[in-house]
Image (cartoon, rainbow, N blue to C red):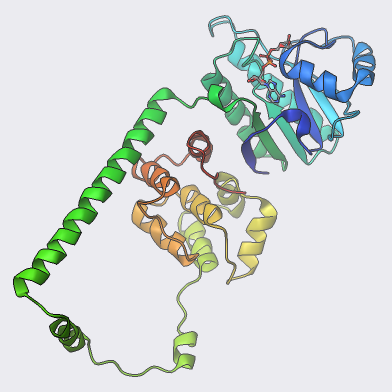
Length: 337
Ligand code: AR6
Protein backbone atom coordinates (compact mmCIF):
# COMPACT_ATOMS: atom_id res chain seq x y z
CA UNK A 1 0.00 0.00 0.00
CA UNK A 2 2.82 2.47 0.17
CA UNK A 3 3.31 5.38 -2.15
CA UNK A 4 6.75 5.77 -3.68
CA UNK A 5 8.15 8.65 -5.67
CA UNK A 6 10.88 7.60 -8.05
CA UNK A 7 12.84 8.95 -10.94
CA UNK A 8 12.46 6.64 -13.92
CA UNK A 9 11.19 6.24 -17.44
CA UNK A 10 7.69 4.82 -16.89
CA UNK A 11 8.03 2.46 -19.87
CA UNK A 12 10.68 0.57 -17.89
CA UNK A 13 8.55 0.01 -14.80
CA UNK A 14 7.99 -3.63 -13.87
CA UNK A 15 4.56 -3.25 -12.35
CA UNK A 16 1.12 -4.67 -13.05
CA UNK A 17 -0.07 -1.46 -14.70
CA UNK A 18 1.26 1.86 -15.87
CA UNK A 19 -0.83 4.96 -16.43
CA UNK A 20 -0.64 6.84 -19.71
CA UNK A 21 -1.29 10.59 -19.85
CA UNK A 22 -3.18 10.39 -23.14
CA UNK A 23 -5.47 12.66 -25.16
CA UNK A 24 -9.18 12.20 -25.86
CA UNK A 25 -8.60 10.30 -29.11
CA UNK A 26 -6.41 7.68 -27.39
CA UNK A 27 -4.55 7.39 -30.67
CA UNK A 28 -1.14 8.42 -29.38
CA UNK A 29 0.71 11.71 -29.17
CA UNK A 30 3.91 13.14 -27.72
CA UNK A 31 5.39 13.07 -24.19
CA UNK A 32 4.77 9.99 -22.10
CA UNK A 33 1.98 8.92 -24.49
CA UNK A 34 4.44 8.84 -27.40
CA UNK A 35 7.03 6.93 -25.39
CA UNK A 36 4.47 4.32 -24.31
CA UNK A 37 3.15 3.77 -27.85
CA UNK A 38 6.67 3.53 -29.26
CA UNK A 39 7.81 0.93 -26.73
CA UNK A 40 4.57 -1.07 -26.61
CA UNK A 41 4.45 -1.49 -30.39
CA UNK A 42 1.79 -1.10 -33.09
CA UNK A 43 -0.66 -3.54 -31.53
CA UNK A 44 -1.34 -1.01 -28.79
CA UNK A 45 -2.65 1.50 -31.32
CA UNK A 46 -4.86 -1.21 -32.83
CA UNK A 47 -6.47 -1.90 -29.47
CA UNK A 48 -6.79 1.82 -28.70
CA UNK A 49 -8.73 2.32 -31.94
CA UNK A 50 -11.45 0.03 -30.58
CA UNK A 51 -11.96 2.02 -27.39
CA UNK A 52 -13.92 4.98 -28.79
CA UNK A 53 -11.78 7.65 -27.16
CA UNK A 54 -11.86 8.78 -23.54
CA UNK A 55 -13.29 11.80 -21.71
CA UNK A 56 -11.24 14.09 -19.48
CA UNK A 57 -10.83 12.53 -16.03
CA UNK A 58 -11.92 9.10 -17.26
CA UNK A 59 -9.75 6.00 -17.73
CA UNK A 60 -9.63 3.04 -20.14
CA UNK A 61 -7.48 -0.07 -20.05
CA UNK A 62 -5.47 -2.01 -22.65
CA UNK A 63 -2.89 -4.76 -22.56
CA UNK A 64 0.77 -3.83 -22.08
CA UNK A 65 2.09 -5.55 -25.23
CA UNK A 66 5.89 -5.20 -25.45
CA UNK A 67 6.13 -3.25 -22.19
CA UNK A 68 7.12 -5.06 -18.99
CA UNK A 69 3.71 -4.26 -17.44
CA UNK A 70 0.52 -6.31 -17.88
CA UNK A 71 -1.77 -3.33 -18.48
CA UNK A 72 -1.73 0.26 -19.62
CA UNK A 73 -4.40 2.51 -18.15
CA UNK A 74 -5.05 5.47 -20.41
CA UNK A 75 -6.43 8.59 -18.82
CA UNK A 76 -6.93 12.12 -20.11
CA UNK A 77 -5.83 14.94 -17.85
CA UNK A 78 -7.24 18.46 -17.96
CA UNK A 79 -5.54 21.19 -19.95
CA UNK A 80 -4.39 23.88 -17.50
CA UNK A 81 -6.39 27.06 -18.00
CA UNK A 82 -5.36 29.05 -14.95
CA UNK A 83 -6.81 26.80 -12.26
CA UNK A 84 -10.39 28.07 -12.11
CA UNK A 85 -11.90 25.74 -14.65
CA UNK A 86 -12.23 22.66 -12.44
CA UNK A 87 -8.75 21.40 -13.36
CA UNK A 88 -8.00 20.09 -9.88
CA UNK A 89 -11.19 18.00 -9.70
CA UNK A 90 -10.60 16.55 -13.17
CA UNK A 91 -6.99 15.69 -12.36
CA UNK A 92 -8.08 13.99 -9.12
CA UNK A 93 -10.62 12.00 -11.17
CA UNK A 94 -7.81 10.81 -13.47
CA UNK A 95 -5.97 9.25 -10.53
CA UNK A 96 -9.07 7.89 -8.79
CA UNK A 97 -10.49 6.36 -11.98
CA UNK A 98 -7.13 4.88 -13.00
CA UNK A 99 -6.66 3.32 -9.56
CA UNK A 100 -10.23 1.97 -9.51
CA UNK A 101 -9.66 0.35 -12.88
CA UNK A 102 -6.37 -1.13 -11.68
CA UNK A 103 -8.18 -2.58 -8.70
CA UNK A 104 -10.88 -4.04 -10.91
CA UNK A 105 -8.13 -5.83 -12.86
CA UNK A 106 -6.56 -7.03 -9.59
CA UNK A 107 -3.35 -5.06 -10.00
CA UNK A 108 -1.12 -4.99 -6.97
CA UNK A 109 1.25 -2.37 -8.28
CA UNK A 110 0.84 0.62 -10.55
CA UNK A 111 3.03 3.46 -11.79
CA UNK A 112 1.65 6.90 -12.69
CA UNK A 113 3.36 9.79 -14.43
CA UNK A 114 2.60 13.34 -13.34
CA UNK A 115 -0.51 13.59 -15.50
CA UNK A 116 -1.14 16.95 -17.25
CA UNK A 117 2.18 18.38 -16.09
CA UNK A 118 3.78 18.41 -19.55
CA UNK A 119 2.01 19.44 -22.75
CA UNK A 120 -1.21 20.21 -20.84
CA UNK A 121 0.63 22.78 -18.74
CA UNK A 122 -0.49 21.95 -15.19
CA UNK A 123 2.12 23.51 -12.85
CA UNK A 124 4.32 20.64 -11.68
CA UNK A 125 4.29 21.56 -8.00
CA UNK A 126 0.48 21.62 -8.01
CA UNK A 127 0.25 18.50 -10.16
CA UNK A 128 2.41 16.61 -7.68
CA UNK A 129 0.26 17.77 -4.77
CA UNK A 130 -2.93 16.62 -6.49
CA UNK A 131 -1.31 13.28 -7.36
CA UNK A 132 -0.11 12.57 -3.81
CA UNK A 133 -3.42 13.62 -2.26
CA UNK A 134 -5.55 11.60 -4.67
CA UNK A 135 -3.35 8.51 -4.37
CA UNK A 136 -2.98 8.63 -0.59
CA UNK A 137 -6.77 9.04 -0.25
CA UNK A 138 -7.23 5.86 -2.29
CA UNK A 139 -4.56 4.03 -0.26
CA UNK A 140 -6.49 4.72 2.94
CA UNK A 141 -9.07 2.22 1.73
CA UNK A 142 -7.29 -0.14 -0.63
CA UNK A 143 -4.06 -2.10 -0.73
CA UNK A 144 -1.81 -1.33 -3.67
CA UNK A 145 1.77 -0.27 -4.25
CA UNK A 146 1.74 2.98 -6.19
CA UNK A 147 4.69 4.73 -7.80
CA UNK A 148 4.66 8.33 -8.90
CA UNK A 149 7.23 8.38 -11.65
CA UNK A 150 9.13 11.59 -12.17
CA UNK A 151 10.85 11.59 -15.51
CA UNK A 152 12.92 14.67 -15.36
CA UNK A 153 14.30 15.51 -11.95
CA UNK A 154 15.22 19.06 -12.89
CA UNK A 155 11.59 19.82 -13.63
CA UNK A 156 10.47 18.31 -10.34
CA UNK A 157 9.56 20.96 -7.86
CA UNK A 158 8.36 20.95 -4.31
CA UNK A 159 7.05 24.28 -3.11
CA UNK A 160 9.75 26.87 -3.52
CA UNK A 161 9.12 28.12 -0.01
CA UNK A 162 9.41 24.66 1.53
CA UNK A 163 12.57 23.98 -0.45
CA UNK A 164 14.08 27.30 0.63
CA UNK A 165 13.07 26.79 4.29
CA UNK A 166 14.54 23.27 4.42
CA UNK A 167 17.67 24.39 2.62
CA UNK A 168 18.31 27.26 4.98
CA UNK A 169 17.64 24.96 7.95
CA UNK A 170 20.24 22.50 6.61
CA UNK A 171 22.73 25.32 6.03
CA UNK A 172 22.13 26.76 9.52
CA UNK A 173 22.56 23.39 11.16
CA UNK A 174 25.78 22.68 9.29
CA UNK A 175 27.08 26.15 10.20
CA UNK A 176 26.02 25.79 13.84
CA UNK A 177 27.56 22.36 14.05
CA UNK A 178 30.84 23.63 12.63
CA UNK A 179 30.98 26.55 15.07
CA UNK A 180 29.91 24.32 17.94
CA UNK A 181 32.58 21.70 17.21
CA UNK A 182 35.24 24.35 16.88
CA UNK A 183 34.32 26.02 20.16
CA UNK A 184 34.08 22.65 21.86
CA UNK A 185 37.57 21.73 20.69
CA UNK A 186 38.88 25.12 21.79
CA UNK A 187 37.23 24.89 25.18
CA UNK A 188 38.62 21.46 25.91
CA UNK A 189 42.01 22.58 24.67
CA UNK A 190 41.91 25.68 26.89
CA UNK A 191 40.80 23.63 29.86
CA UNK A 192 43.65 21.22 29.36
CA UNK A 193 46.29 23.90 28.92
CA UNK A 194 45.07 26.02 31.85
CA UNK A 195 45.40 23.02 34.13
CA UNK A 196 48.65 22.10 32.35
CA UNK A 197 47.38 18.64 32.74
CA UNK A 198 49.79 15.94 31.62
CA UNK A 199 48.53 12.64 30.34
CA UNK A 200 49.20 10.86 33.63
CA UNK A 201 47.18 13.46 35.53
CA UNK A 202 44.36 13.03 33.05
CA UNK A 203 44.31 9.26 33.48
CA UNK A 204 44.37 9.63 37.26
CA UNK A 205 41.43 12.01 37.27
CA UNK A 206 39.44 9.69 35.04
CA UNK A 207 40.18 6.77 37.36
CA UNK A 208 39.18 8.73 40.43
CA UNK A 209 35.96 9.91 38.85
CA UNK A 210 34.77 6.42 37.98
CA UNK A 211 32.09 5.29 40.46
CA UNK A 212 32.54 2.00 42.23
CA UNK A 213 30.42 -0.51 40.37
CA UNK A 214 28.89 -3.74 41.59
CA UNK A 215 29.70 -6.46 39.14
CA UNK A 216 26.63 -7.60 37.23
CA UNK A 217 26.38 -10.98 35.59
CA UNK A 218 25.60 -11.34 31.91
CA UNK A 219 22.44 -13.28 32.80
CA UNK A 220 21.21 -10.41 34.98
CA UNK A 221 21.82 -7.91 32.20
CA UNK A 222 20.03 -10.00 29.60
CA UNK A 223 16.94 -10.46 31.77
CA UNK A 224 16.73 -6.70 32.25
CA UNK A 225 16.51 -5.85 28.55
CA UNK A 226 14.92 -2.49 27.78
CA UNK A 227 11.69 -2.15 25.85
CA UNK A 228 12.33 -3.07 22.20
CA UNK A 229 11.43 -1.00 19.13
CA UNK A 230 8.41 -3.13 18.42
CA UNK A 231 7.19 -3.00 22.03
CA UNK A 232 7.58 0.77 22.18
CA UNK A 233 5.81 1.18 18.84
CA UNK A 234 2.80 -0.88 19.94
CA UNK A 235 2.66 0.95 23.28
CA UNK A 236 2.74 4.36 21.58
CA UNK A 237 0.02 3.33 19.10
CA UNK A 238 -2.20 2.44 22.08
CA UNK A 239 -1.32 5.60 23.97
CA UNK A 240 -2.20 7.74 20.95
CA UNK A 241 -5.51 5.91 20.58
CA UNK A 242 -4.67 4.93 17.00
CA UNK A 243 -5.56 1.72 15.25
CA UNK A 244 -2.75 -0.35 13.75
CA UNK A 245 -3.92 0.38 10.23
CA UNK A 246 -4.17 4.12 10.84
CA UNK A 247 -0.60 4.03 12.02
CA UNK A 248 1.02 1.96 9.26
CA UNK A 249 -0.89 3.79 6.54
CA UNK A 250 0.19 7.13 7.96
CA UNK A 251 3.73 5.76 8.05
CA UNK A 252 3.54 4.74 4.36
CA UNK A 253 4.42 1.23 5.49
CA UNK A 254 3.19 -2.00 4.01
CA UNK A 255 0.69 -4.05 6.06
CA UNK A 256 2.86 -7.19 5.76
CA UNK A 257 5.88 -5.39 7.14
CA UNK A 258 3.82 -3.98 9.98
CA UNK A 259 2.63 -7.45 11.02
CA UNK A 260 6.22 -8.70 10.94
CA UNK A 261 7.18 -5.91 13.34
CA UNK A 262 4.13 -6.51 15.51
CA UNK A 263 4.78 -10.25 15.77
CA UNK A 264 8.48 -10.11 16.48
CA UNK A 265 9.49 -8.09 19.52
CA UNK A 266 13.09 -8.17 18.36
CA UNK A 267 12.36 -7.03 14.83
CA UNK A 268 15.09 -4.78 13.49
CA UNK A 269 13.55 -2.25 11.08
CA UNK A 270 15.40 -0.12 8.55
CA UNK A 271 16.05 3.43 9.67
CA UNK A 272 13.57 4.81 7.14
CA UNK A 273 10.88 2.57 8.63
CA UNK A 274 11.68 3.57 12.22
CA UNK A 275 11.56 7.25 11.28
CA UNK A 276 8.33 6.73 9.35
CA UNK A 277 6.66 5.41 12.49
CA UNK A 278 7.95 8.34 14.55
CA UNK A 279 6.26 10.62 12.00
CA UNK A 280 3.04 8.60 11.92
CA UNK A 281 2.83 8.75 15.71
CA UNK A 282 3.39 12.52 15.59
CA UNK A 283 6.16 12.33 18.17
CA UNK A 284 8.14 15.35 19.24
CA UNK A 285 11.86 15.43 18.58
CA UNK A 286 12.86 13.87 21.91
CA UNK A 287 10.30 11.07 21.69
CA UNK A 288 11.19 10.47 18.05
CA UNK A 289 14.87 10.15 18.94
CA UNK A 290 13.96 7.66 21.66
CA UNK A 291 11.88 5.48 19.32
CA UNK A 292 14.50 5.59 16.57
CA UNK A 293 17.23 4.70 19.06
CA UNK A 294 15.27 1.56 19.98
CA UNK A 295 15.96 0.39 16.46
CA UNK A 296 19.65 1.17 16.90
CA UNK A 297 19.73 4.48 14.97
CA UNK A 298 20.14 8.12 15.80
CA UNK A 299 19.31 11.48 14.29
CA UNK A 300 22.58 13.28 13.88
CA UNK A 301 23.41 16.68 12.53
CA UNK A 302 25.93 15.42 10.07
CA UNK A 303 23.50 13.85 7.64
CA UNK A 304 21.16 15.74 5.34
CA UNK A 305 18.49 13.05 5.76
CA UNK A 306 18.55 13.44 9.54
CA UNK A 307 18.44 17.22 9.40
CA UNK A 308 15.44 17.18 7.06
CA UNK A 309 13.64 14.85 9.46
CA UNK A 310 14.54 17.13 12.35
CA UNK A 311 13.16 20.11 10.40
CA UNK A 312 9.79 18.41 9.96
CA UNK A 313 9.63 17.19 13.56
CA UNK A 314 10.44 20.65 14.90
CA UNK A 315 7.79 22.16 12.64
CA UNK A 316 5.30 19.47 13.68
CA UNK A 317 4.63 18.71 10.04
CA UNK A 318 3.78 15.02 10.03
CA UNK A 319 2.65 14.69 6.43
CA UNK A 320 4.75 11.76 5.28
CA UNK A 321 4.09 12.46 1.61
CA UNK A 322 5.27 16.04 1.91
CA UNK A 323 8.33 14.82 3.80
CA UNK A 324 9.02 12.26 1.07
CA UNK A 325 8.66 14.88 -1.66
CA UNK A 326 11.21 16.99 0.20
CA UNK A 327 13.57 14.06 0.73
CA UNK A 328 13.25 13.27 -2.96
CA UNK A 329 14.03 16.87 -3.90
CA UNK A 330 17.19 16.66 -1.79
CA UNK A 331 18.17 13.26 -3.27
CA UNK A 332 17.62 11.34 -0.06
CA UNK A 333 16.04 7.96 0.60
CA UNK A 334 12.30 8.08 1.28
CA UNK A 335 10.37 7.07 4.38
CA UNK A 336 8.25 3.95 4.76
CA UNK A 337 8.62 1.07 2.39
N1 AR6 B 1 8.21 8.42 -18.16
C1 AR6 B 1 7.66 9.10 -17.15
N2 AR6 B 1 7.22 10.37 -17.27
C2 AR6 B 1 7.34 10.96 -18.49
C3 AR6 B 1 7.91 10.31 -19.61
C4 AR6 B 1 8.34 8.97 -19.41
N3 AR6 B 1 8.89 8.25 -20.40
N4 AR6 B 1 7.90 11.17 -20.65
C5 AR6 B 1 7.38 12.32 -20.21
N5 AR6 B 1 7.05 12.20 -18.90
P1 AR6 B 1 2.96 14.79 -21.01
P2 AR6 B 1 0.25 15.76 -20.38
C6 AR6 B 1 6.45 13.19 -17.97
O1 AR6 B 1 3.20 15.95 -21.90
O2 AR6 B 1 0.80 17.01 -19.83
C7 AR6 B 1 0.61 13.98 -25.23
O3 AR6 B 1 0.93 14.40 -26.51
C8 AR6 B 1 6.63 14.65 -18.33
O4 AR6 B 1 7.89 15.12 -17.86
O5 AR6 B 1 3.40 13.47 -21.51
O6 AR6 B 1 -0.82 15.05 -19.63
C9 AR6 B 1 -0.78 13.34 -25.15
O7 AR6 B 1 -1.12 12.66 -26.34
C10 AR6 B 1 5.48 15.28 -17.57
O8 AR6 B 1 5.87 15.56 -16.23
O9 AR6 B 1 1.36 14.65 -20.69
C11 AR6 B 1 -1.65 14.53 -24.91
O10 AR6 B 1 -1.99 15.16 -26.10
C12 AR6 B 1 4.42 14.19 -17.53
O11 AR6 B 1 5.05 13.01 -17.99
C13 AR6 B 1 -0.82 15.43 -24.05
O12 AR6 B 1 0.54 15.11 -24.37
C14 AR6 B 1 3.22 14.46 -18.40
O13 AR6 B 1 3.60 15.12 -19.60
C15 AR6 B 1 -1.02 15.18 -22.57
O14 AR6 B 1 -0.29 16.12 -21.84
